[in-house]
Image (cartoon, rainbow over all chains, first blue to last red; front, side):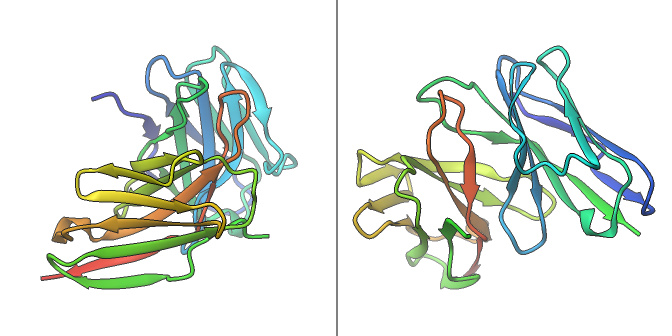
Length: 115
Length: 114
């Protein structure tokens, strides 16, 4: 069964350092999402791509976060510099991006700890 | 502004009985609703969904009910099994050119007791 791949699974970094997360969506899925989940809360959308274009980054803290999906396939989310409040689970999801295909499929996530 | 709310942080149910998880929403533009299940250290797994044109959708042991007038949906699991112990999230989307942004509730931790 096709899955969304993410790496690394765990990352510990010191504040003010740069971190990067990678996501490979299910093959053929045009839409890719990055969510952040803080402990005890539901996932919150950071950025959404349709192919290589950003369609929603309204909740992305653009002073420190950046995301790209250069060839419309895999994607990288970067934080620079990391802050203590960035400690969370970062989830990548993908979907077909077609009308009626609403289900999003999630990867295992990257657990970030900023010290 | 919490548009999707799961007011019960936890629920404990005896094995074999029915589990009922509840979710309320405030945005009347939401037209599709989903339930996800999450085990520790894993990403959420899609369980079941329902369109706003329906009031019930069933898949095996899982049934989702939607009450649009009350802006309320619920997930019924019957019979409950130990493997159902997990955190359950409801999510809603408002439709956007086929690419759906999901708004999640806070989650309910379900524990099935033997």
